[in-house]
Length: 249
Image (cartoon, rainbow, N blue to C red; front, side, top):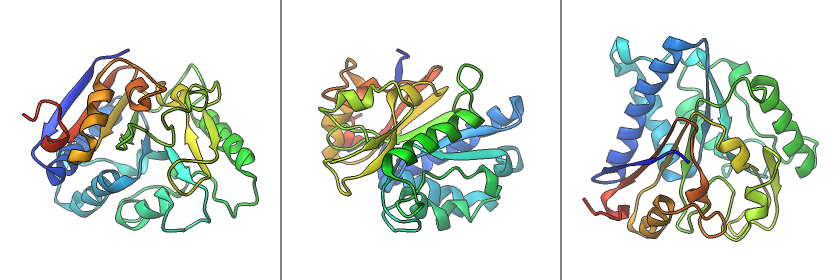
Protein backbone atom coordinates (compact mmCIF):
# COMPACT_ATOMS: atom_id res chain seq x y z
CA UNK A 1 0.00 0.00 0.00
CA UNK A 2 1.32 3.42 -0.93
CA UNK A 3 2.08 5.99 1.75
CA UNK A 4 -0.74 8.43 2.48
CA UNK A 5 0.25 12.08 2.38
CA UNK A 6 -1.80 14.21 4.78
CA UNK A 7 -2.41 17.80 3.64
CA UNK A 8 -4.03 20.05 6.23
CA UNK A 9 -5.54 23.44 5.39
CA UNK A 10 -7.01 25.98 7.85
CA UNK A 11 -10.67 25.54 6.90
CA UNK A 12 -13.08 24.01 4.41
CA UNK A 13 -12.76 26.84 1.89
CA UNK A 14 -8.99 26.45 1.92
CA UNK A 15 -9.29 22.69 1.39
CA UNK A 16 -11.50 23.31 -1.63
CA UNK A 17 -9.19 25.88 -3.21
CA UNK A 18 -6.06 23.80 -2.48
CA UNK A 19 -7.50 20.65 -4.06
CA UNK A 20 -8.70 22.62 -7.09
CA UNK A 21 -5.30 24.21 -7.65
CA UNK A 22 -3.58 20.85 -7.23
CA UNK A 23 -5.96 19.29 -9.75
CA UNK A 24 -5.03 21.84 -12.37
CA UNK A 25 -1.32 21.34 -11.86
CA UNK A 26 -1.64 17.58 -11.87
CA UNK A 27 -3.77 17.38 -15.02
CA UNK A 28 -1.45 19.75 -16.89
CA UNK A 29 1.40 17.35 -16.07
CA UNK A 30 -0.62 14.28 -17.08
CA UNK A 31 -1.70 15.81 -20.39
CA UNK A 32 1.88 16.79 -21.15
CA UNK A 33 2.70 13.08 -21.12
CA UNK A 34 -0.38 11.46 -22.67
CA UNK A 35 -3.23 12.24 -25.03
CA UNK A 36 -6.07 12.13 -22.50
CA UNK A 37 -6.75 11.91 -18.77
CA UNK A 38 -9.41 9.87 -16.98
CA UNK A 39 -10.75 11.34 -13.75
CA UNK A 40 -13.38 9.93 -11.36
CA UNK A 41 -15.43 12.56 -9.54
CA UNK A 42 -17.15 12.49 -6.17
CA UNK A 43 -20.11 14.25 -4.60
CA UNK A 44 -20.45 15.80 -1.17
CA UNK A 45 -20.03 19.41 -0.16
CA UNK A 46 -16.23 19.41 -0.52
CA UNK A 47 -16.24 17.46 -3.79
CA UNK A 48 -18.87 19.66 -5.42
CA UNK A 49 -17.19 22.73 -3.93
CA UNK A 50 -13.97 21.80 -5.72
CA UNK A 51 -15.79 21.42 -9.02
CA UNK A 52 -17.58 24.74 -8.53
CA UNK A 53 -14.25 26.45 -7.78
CA UNK A 54 -12.71 25.00 -10.94
CA UNK A 55 -15.63 26.07 -13.09
CA UNK A 56 -15.77 29.58 -11.65
CA UNK A 57 -12.06 30.38 -11.83
CA UNK A 58 -10.98 28.75 -15.08
CA UNK A 59 -10.88 32.01 -17.06
CA UNK A 60 -8.49 33.56 -14.53
CA UNK A 61 -5.90 30.78 -14.68
CA UNK A 62 -2.46 31.50 -16.07
CA UNK A 63 -1.82 29.98 -19.49
CA UNK A 64 0.74 27.49 -18.18
CA UNK A 65 -1.79 26.25 -15.59
CA UNK A 66 -4.71 25.94 -17.99
CA UNK A 67 -6.12 22.45 -18.45
CA UNK A 68 -7.35 21.36 -21.88
CA UNK A 69 -10.62 19.99 -20.53
CA UNK A 70 -11.58 18.67 -23.98
CA UNK A 71 -8.99 15.94 -23.41
CA UNK A 72 -10.33 14.92 -19.99
CA UNK A 73 -12.75 12.01 -19.51
CA UNK A 74 -15.08 12.25 -16.51
CA UNK A 75 -16.24 9.22 -14.52
CA UNK A 76 -18.00 8.90 -11.17
CA UNK A 77 -17.00 6.85 -8.14
CA UNK A 78 -20.61 6.26 -7.14
CA UNK A 79 -24.12 7.41 -7.92
CA UNK A 80 -27.56 7.44 -6.33
CA UNK A 81 -30.14 5.25 -8.08
CA UNK A 82 -32.62 8.00 -8.91
CA UNK A 83 -33.85 9.42 -12.25
CA UNK A 84 -31.54 11.35 -14.58
CA UNK A 85 -31.25 15.00 -13.61
CA UNK A 86 -32.47 14.39 -10.05
CA UNK A 87 -30.89 16.82 -7.59
CA UNK A 88 -29.55 13.92 -5.50
CA UNK A 89 -27.40 12.59 -8.33
CA UNK A 90 -23.71 13.43 -8.15
CA UNK A 91 -23.56 14.10 -11.89
CA UNK A 92 -26.53 16.50 -11.68
CA UNK A 93 -24.83 18.47 -8.89
CA UNK A 94 -21.71 18.73 -11.04
CA UNK A 95 -23.56 19.63 -14.24
CA UNK A 96 -24.01 23.40 -14.07
CA UNK A 97 -21.02 24.33 -11.92
CA UNK A 98 -18.44 22.19 -13.73
CA UNK A 99 -19.50 20.09 -16.71
CA UNK A 100 -21.26 22.91 -18.59
CA UNK A 101 -18.82 25.57 -17.39
CA UNK A 102 -15.78 23.94 -19.00
CA UNK A 103 -15.03 22.58 -22.47
CA UNK A 104 -15.72 18.88 -22.06
CA UNK A 105 -16.58 16.77 -25.08
CA UNK A 106 -19.97 15.10 -24.72
CA UNK A 107 -18.54 11.67 -25.49
CA UNK A 108 -16.05 12.09 -22.63
CA UNK A 109 -18.78 12.35 -19.96
CA UNK A 110 -19.30 8.84 -18.59
CA UNK A 111 -22.33 9.03 -16.31
CA UNK A 112 -23.52 6.07 -14.31
CA UNK A 113 -26.94 4.90 -15.56
CA UNK A 114 -30.00 6.47 -13.95
CA UNK A 115 -33.00 4.62 -12.53
CA UNK A 116 -35.13 5.69 -15.51
CA UNK A 117 -32.66 4.39 -18.13
CA UNK A 118 -34.61 1.15 -18.66
CA UNK A 119 -32.09 -1.03 -16.80
CA UNK A 120 -32.27 -2.89 -13.52
CA UNK A 121 -29.79 -1.88 -10.83
CA UNK A 122 -27.67 -4.96 -11.55
CA UNK A 123 -27.81 -4.35 -15.30
CA UNK A 124 -26.71 -0.75 -14.71
CA UNK A 125 -23.68 -1.92 -12.71
CA UNK A 126 -22.74 -4.34 -15.49
CA UNK A 127 -23.18 -1.64 -18.13
CA UNK A 128 -20.91 0.83 -16.33
CA UNK A 129 -18.29 -1.84 -15.77
CA UNK A 130 -18.35 -2.53 -19.51
CA UNK A 131 -17.98 1.20 -20.22
CA UNK A 132 -14.93 1.35 -17.95
CA UNK A 133 -13.41 -1.67 -19.62
CA UNK A 134 -14.02 -0.23 -23.08
CA UNK A 135 -12.07 2.95 -22.35
CA UNK A 136 -9.69 1.60 -19.70
CA UNK A 137 -8.98 -2.02 -20.62
CA UNK A 138 -7.58 -3.96 -17.70
CA UNK A 139 -3.82 -4.17 -17.52
CA UNK A 140 -3.15 -1.49 -20.13
CA UNK A 141 -4.64 1.71 -18.74
CA UNK A 142 -6.12 2.93 -15.47
CA UNK A 143 -7.93 5.93 -14.07
CA UNK A 144 -5.42 8.74 -13.75
CA UNK A 145 -7.02 10.43 -10.77
CA UNK A 146 -9.83 9.48 -8.38
CA UNK A 147 -11.44 11.93 -5.95
CA UNK A 148 -13.21 10.56 -2.89
CA UNK A 149 -15.03 12.25 -0.06
CA UNK A 150 -14.82 10.67 3.38
CA UNK A 151 -17.96 10.27 5.45
CA UNK A 152 -18.09 10.56 9.26
CA UNK A 153 -18.26 6.75 9.34
CA UNK A 154 -15.17 6.54 7.07
CA UNK A 155 -17.15 5.38 4.05
CA UNK A 156 -15.95 6.26 0.55
CA UNK A 157 -17.98 6.20 -2.67
CA UNK A 158 -20.87 3.92 -1.61
CA UNK A 159 -18.64 1.46 0.24
CA UNK A 160 -19.80 1.42 3.86
CA UNK A 161 -18.38 -0.05 7.07
CA UNK A 162 -19.48 -3.58 7.90
CA UNK A 163 -20.07 -4.43 4.25
CA UNK A 164 -16.61 -5.60 3.24
CA UNK A 165 -17.97 -8.23 0.84
CA UNK A 166 -19.27 -5.40 -1.35
CA UNK A 167 -16.11 -3.32 -1.10
CA UNK A 168 -13.85 -6.28 -1.85
CA UNK A 169 -15.97 -7.68 -4.68
CA UNK A 170 -14.09 -9.04 -7.68
CA UNK A 171 -16.29 -6.79 -9.82
CA UNK A 172 -15.33 -3.20 -10.66
CA UNK A 173 -18.86 -1.79 -10.28
CA UNK A 174 -21.49 -3.07 -7.85
CA UNK A 175 -25.16 -2.55 -7.13
CA UNK A 176 -25.64 -1.31 -3.56
CA UNK A 177 -28.90 -2.08 -1.77
CA UNK A 178 -30.08 -1.08 1.71
CA UNK A 179 -27.49 1.67 1.94
CA UNK A 180 -27.22 3.09 5.48
CA UNK A 181 -27.41 6.53 3.84
CA UNK A 182 -30.44 7.38 1.72
CA UNK A 183 -31.30 6.68 -0.97
CA UNK A 184 -31.06 2.94 -0.31
CA UNK A 185 -30.07 1.91 -3.84
CA UNK A 186 -26.82 3.07 -5.44
CA UNK A 187 -24.04 2.18 -7.84
CA UNK A 188 -20.43 2.21 -6.72
CA UNK A 189 -16.93 1.45 -7.88
CA UNK A 190 -15.28 -1.23 -5.75
CA UNK A 191 -11.84 -1.26 -4.15
CA UNK A 192 -10.64 -3.22 -7.16
CA UNK A 193 -11.52 -0.29 -9.41
CA UNK A 194 -10.53 2.52 -7.03
CA UNK A 195 -7.18 0.96 -6.16
CA UNK A 196 -6.26 0.51 -9.81
CA UNK A 197 -6.09 4.31 -10.18
CA UNK A 198 -2.69 5.95 -10.44
CA UNK A 199 -3.55 8.73 -7.99
CA UNK A 200 -6.25 8.72 -5.30
CA UNK A 201 -7.08 11.91 -3.42
CA UNK A 202 -9.41 11.75 -0.42
CA UNK A 203 -10.84 14.99 0.95
CA UNK A 204 -13.11 16.15 3.73
CA UNK A 205 -13.61 18.91 6.30
CA UNK A 206 -15.25 19.38 9.68
CA UNK A 207 -14.66 18.27 13.24
CA UNK A 208 -17.20 15.46 12.78
CA UNK A 209 -14.73 13.84 10.35
CA UNK A 210 -11.77 13.79 12.76
CA UNK A 211 -12.26 10.16 13.78
CA UNK A 212 -12.72 9.14 10.16
CA UNK A 213 -9.45 10.83 9.21
CA UNK A 214 -7.62 9.02 12.02
CA UNK A 215 -9.02 5.71 10.80
CA UNK A 216 -8.13 6.57 7.20
CA UNK A 217 -4.51 7.18 8.14
CA UNK A 218 -4.30 4.02 10.24
CA UNK A 219 -3.91 0.39 9.28
CA UNK A 220 -6.10 -0.86 6.44
CA UNK A 221 -9.36 -2.24 7.83
CA UNK A 222 -12.09 -2.29 5.23
CA UNK A 223 -14.68 -3.65 7.68
CA UNK A 224 -14.30 -0.69 10.05
CA UNK A 225 -13.12 2.05 7.69
CA UNK A 226 -13.35 1.55 3.92
CA UNK A 227 -11.39 4.80 3.49
CA UNK A 228 -8.36 3.12 5.08
CA UNK A 229 -8.32 0.47 2.35
CA UNK A 230 -8.17 2.90 -0.59
CA UNK A 231 -4.80 3.60 -2.18
CA UNK A 232 -3.50 4.76 -5.53
CA UNK A 233 -0.89 2.83 -7.46
CA UNK A 234 1.45 5.85 -7.47
CA UNK A 235 0.12 8.19 -4.80
CA UNK A 236 -2.53 8.61 -2.12
CA UNK A 237 -3.34 12.01 -0.63
CA UNK A 238 -5.67 12.91 2.22
CA UNK A 239 -6.84 16.53 2.35
CA UNK A 240 -8.66 17.89 5.38
CA UNK A 241 -9.10 21.07 7.37
CA UNK A 242 -7.55 21.72 10.77
CA UNK A 243 -10.67 20.70 12.69
CA UNK A 244 -10.61 17.24 11.07
CA UNK A 245 -6.85 16.72 11.37
CA UNK A 246 -5.56 14.33 14.03
CA UNK A 247 -2.55 16.63 14.51
CA UNK A 248 -4.60 19.88 14.67
CA UNK A 249 -1.55 21.57 13.09
